[in-house]
Image 1 (spheres, helix red, strand yellow):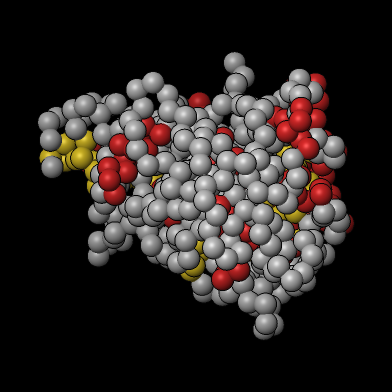
Image 2 (cartoon, rainbow, N blue to C red):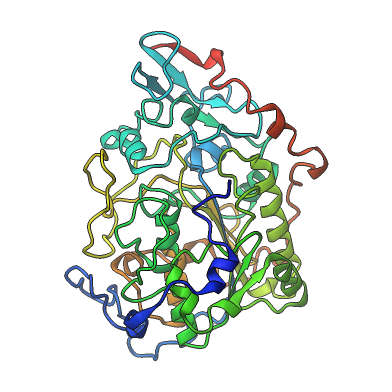
Length: 461
């Protein structure tokens, strides 16, 4: 059965969704759903440099931005044992000491009363089906007012405490060890994939918390329309379907569909030095995105292919690549998400039975993220708070474009991780670890993820 969250190219090309009058809203205007205006230029519709026209290049050192977003993992679940950045609490042997209570009312009952499950290495690179859980309800329980002790109690169950070390994710771990690592990069909202990817494209989910396809247009549109409006090149390179364009009204917007091209074209463009200014590069969401129950090593291979293509490109000297994950997927992370700028005045669309709570004025859980560029700072870990709208802010800073919502207006632009003044440290691309051998991948997809949690990591509280 196909995943109902994914848009097929046929559905996009069919043009079933009409744009209507919403498509005529000005791209530099104020959002109709805005809350009260903030002061200074950091508000929707304001330019980073009010003295220069929108579309002015303010960052000529960077001519190419590439973004890769994978799925459903927290910082701790992939990078917690890396020894770089704010990962797990480790004992003298480098073993994580983090744990969560595993009560009787967990989605998966414990083997005995008053159980506690410690962070444990996943038995293999495959994941359970539909666990952990990435719903608002699960996130709200896991967060537990900032105590971060409700992951095993939530719909996620004990698998939330599992992590993947460098032996399972060799390329990703190498990338995070060499180039700048962002250890305060949070998902934009404590919710599922699509709401977070809407923030990634437009600075708001318009109240949505779940993986629902809708045709409602954000008041100030998306970054794609903003780039088109100013004649700035972009492409969405897709590996399966162009499902990143989940704002379905975009199928009727001029000059959108021609920018949706297959992934093979990305590698051809990178080799030829013809990548556009902004490249949104998507994995195959059925096999490579690292969402459960996939083998995460397939995503490790995909990320290595994209990064190596960029480093080998003639455009490498002026490129900045951002890699990140859309949301935590229900996996444990020990850092409480801080408060965030509320994007607009819209209320969250809860499902029946959902707990009430603060949603859009707090970030979601931390996700793995980093910067790859010849101008990247060596030996640098960014402690600056970022979220998916930091990518929007980077583009807006580069081209002096108006912010789309209060969230991207308040976001940091990721430039703390690069040095624009000195000689590029990574002018000669570094040699990174090889990913897992594709010839031996997928074996666990037939045998299963193993015993979760391993009994050695469950104890009396």
